[in-house]
Amino acid sequence: MFQSKFKLALRRSALLSLFLFISFVSLVAQSLQDRIKALPDIVSVEKMEQNQFFSEAYVVNVKQLVDHEHPDKGFFLQRVFVSHLSYESPVVFVTEGYGGAYAFGKRYLDELCPILKANQIFVEHRFFGKSVPDSIHWVDLTVENAAADQHHVVELFKKIYGQKWVNTGISKGGETTLYHRMLYPDDVEVSVPFVAPLNFSVEEARHPHFIEKEVATRSERKMVKAFQMEVLRRKDRLMPMFEQLCKEKNFHFKTPEREIYDYSVLELSFSFWQWGHSVKEIPATTSTDKIIFDFFQKISSCSYFDIESGKATAPFFVQAHRQLGYYAYDTRPFRKVIETRDMSGYIEKLFLEKDQIFPYDPEMSKETDRYLRSKATKVLLIYGGIDPWSASAATGGKNPGVVKIYQPGGSHRSRISNMPEPLKQKTIDLLQGWMK
Image (cartoon, rainbow, N blue to C red; front, side, top):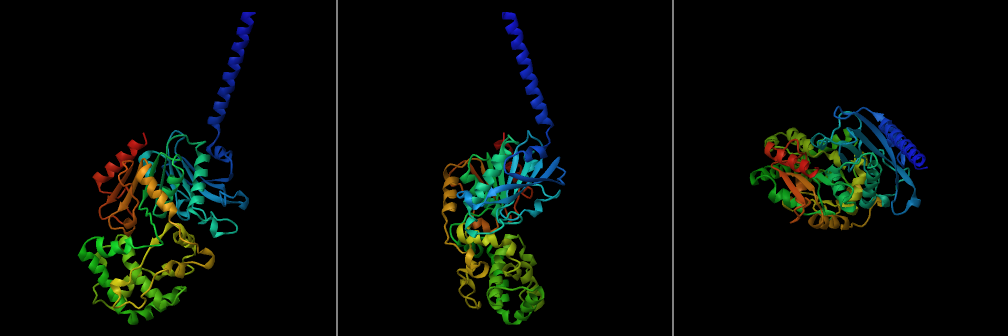
C-alpha cells in the first residue's frame, strides 16, 4: 500500500514538474509582441524599426480613462513606444510632456538607456500628438490625470519587466516626471528630470529677475539688453519688415502686430539664454536694419505667437495657466522705449480660447515641493547654469535623497552626455549606484 501511494506521488510530482516546465518553455517562447498584446487595455501593437541599441521595438496604443476619477467619461488611446533590450534589464520610463512623434523609429534613444543598460518605454502626454480623445474637454487635462496615465502604463508593463524602473523627462517632460513620482512614489526606484521647472504662479517673477540680475556675467547681460533696446528704438523702421514677414508666413495673432513685436523683443532674452547662444553672435548696435532684424527673428521668431503655429502646443498653455505656471515679462527695464507697457495676463490674452481658461491652482507644485524636501529618495535634478528655467528649479532642500547638479554654462540642452568629463562620470556613478 505504501509503495503504491509513493509511486502515485512520484507520478503526480513528475506530471506537475512537466506541466511547469512546459508552461515555462511556453512563456519563454512567447514573443514580446504577444506578451504585450496579452496585457489588459492594450488595443494595438505594431512593430517599428528599433534603435540599434535595442533588439526590437513596438508602437503600442493603451486604453486610458479620460478622467481617472470618473470612468463614465469614457476612454482615449495613448501612444506608447516600447524598445526592448532584455527582460532582465531595468526600464527607463520616459514621461514626455508633449507629443511623441520623434520617438518613432530608430533614431531616438534616451541617454539613460546605454548608461543603465536598460529597456526604454516612452509615453506620449495626454492631449498631445496622437494621444487625444475624440472629443476634447479641457477640464480633463490635469496633472493628476496625466500621472494616472503613466501609473497605468507602469502597472501594465511591470508584468513584463520586473527589474528596477527609472522615470525621466526633459523640460515639461521633467515636470511630468516630478509629478508622476510625487503622486505614485512606488512606481519607480529612481527619477531623473532634466531642466524641469517647478513654478508656483502663472507668471513667475523669478525668471525675469534671473535674466536681469543673475545669468552669465554683468557685461554679457548688458550686451543682450542693449540689443533689445536697439530693436525697440528702431521699431518704426523695422515694422515694415516685421509686417512683411508675417504676411509671407501667413502669421496671425490675437493682438495687433505692433504689440506682438514688443512681446517678441522681451521674449528674446529668455530665448537667447535658454538655448545657449553666445554674446559673440550679437550684431553691433550700429549694424544695418536688415542685420538687426534678421538676428532679432533668428533668436525670437514671432511664429511663437502665431495662432496656427501654436496649435500643436496649445494644450501646454492650458496646463501652464491652470497648474504648471510660466514666466512673466517685465517691461520696467525698457519703460523708456517700449510701446506695450502692461504684459500681465499674456497667456490668456495671446494663447488661450475661452473654454481653455481655468483658475490657477499651484497645489500640485506645492505638494511636489514638499515631497522633494521630505520623503523623496533617489531623485537627480539636472539643470543648466545659464538656462532661465533654472530660476524656478526644483529643490530637495536639506533632503539627502535629492541631488541637484548644475552644468556650468549649460543651457536648456544640458544633458549628461554634454557635461564636463569629471561631472559626467560623477553623475553616471551616482545613477549606477542607485540602480544596484
